[in-house]
Image (tube, rainbow, N blue to C red; front, top):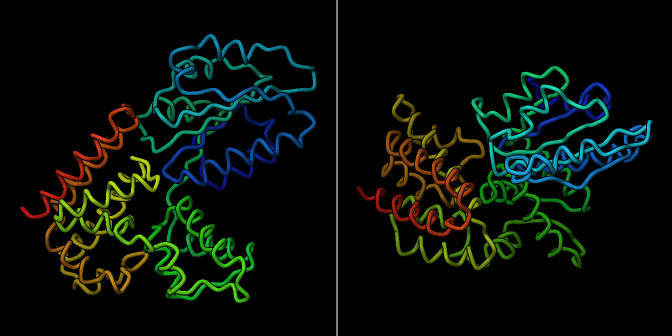
Length: 340
């Protein structure tokens, strides 16, 4: 059945009402959190204690006998077998399509995936089945990000200035995973400080110390058509551990913001108002660059850029061995296009 985020409480509180759940969407951090928390809740349920090793997409797509061997494992009468399945690399259903039509009542499957569309066979089989539910996890709003920051800082007994909070969201976007990583770095930096307050000075010192390697600057260089600077920054980001899919996603979020402003301008809105209405708003030190990028790209060009980035995301997931070349190609195409 089709679910929504609020339905997750039903899965946690009444797992016997379901035979499986699919967590999917672009919000990787929340998906992983729900995926892991669900197993922690199962461990406290006396009727759901028999857990099997996590299965991968490769097994579901190419080795169905492994999956069926797991679900046919004999369990004690009071136990339900719990099977974890990581399908983040595909939108196909594999052997799950047949299994969900005729499931085993003593089995509960928990599946996680990524950004999959309505035409995905994986999503369709969960949405059409009565005893299975597909729950989407969409990207955070600015309000979600601010609440995430507030909770994280409360847990670590830290505070943050408004200027630093806006800059942190500007750097991290509404990506909970990146926000969490950056907040961990800042909390560690403040660990020995008497006043544990994140301000613009210590934020820039911790997160922007290697300015050329900052993701924001990478996106700026690409969108401004500064090809050499973009590749220099790209290489540094790779050395710092940035993964290909992160680089593509950073560019996608960046171009989505340009596209929103460009559309608003085409519809008669003033540029300053369009930029101000972005969530989160453009950081004041970035406004002149963003204005130039909007002028260079416009709505039609950004639409083409987003198509290129969506295709690149699919190619990276499909062919991880070629991911470096795929990202290089995207950076070259977009940075050259900026000046045309």
